[in-house]
Length: 356
Image (cartoon, rainbow, N blue to C red; front, top):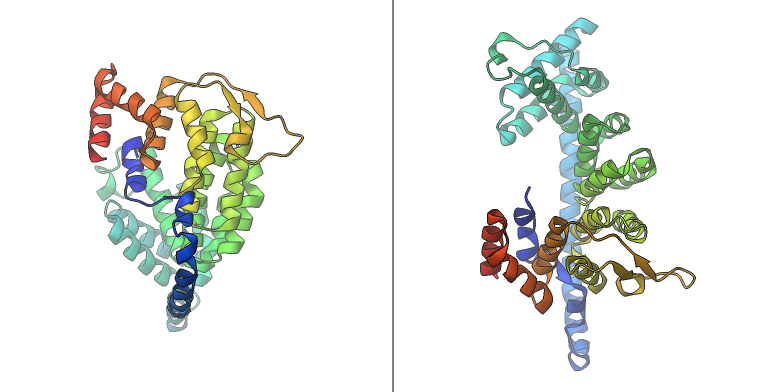
């Protein structure tokens, strides 16, 4: 996803400035609080009902998989290991067959999970190692072995994911290494957590295992965690890495992590804006006390290397999508939209500026 398409979410008002919470003046606040308390009673009841429905839906879905799986088991003799493997392979191939249609994939993967059954869920991970022979009918579509491997991996993971709460322990085991496959499993864990499936367990698991990943993959995982909205633990862990990257002068990592932080919290602070502006305008000295809370014994001023032009421009664009009222940032972007040597950048900036 490009920088411009990503920030459409900001422009659509997804995030708000913390100062917006001070909108009501003192003489209006008393009546507002009284009104809002009455609304909150109704809201709490409705929210409670919604949560109950969601939980009930998840329980029904998982119970359905379990019951139908048991029914298959009762209708036939205990299947052999070879028969189970054959069943699983056939179900994986069904998902691969409609692999390009994501909506169908979700439905077919869920149906496959039902037919495979909870008792055979633990057999699925071994098929992630691409030990499935490519049938002849797929040869034209997957001429590259690597493409076939990815199709198998993704299809197996989608079936595992369809087991919802029962899939968590399996995905946790798969997610422990610095590899694309393991990152995919982590992403699915975060997706489950964002749906309210064992959220606390998943967040704790990922947090405890982050140390095993390199910095690049840590940031990717923090992006996955940002799917779990308004979760204090998630916000706290992302904020920890953002602060750490800033203090160590790793500005690109800090910037990418800040995007995840804003996404997870669905809001931003004046400190975030100041950080973005400092780097966007080419500053190489940062007063930490202006952008974050620091301890009394911490050094306030840090010196950083000048960042690349591309990074500075991206940070200016990010600032603009959050707050388009800064004269310095606006002037920089308007200038680039007219005089940048990068034609694509000029065109994209003109679109961005016109939308405002």
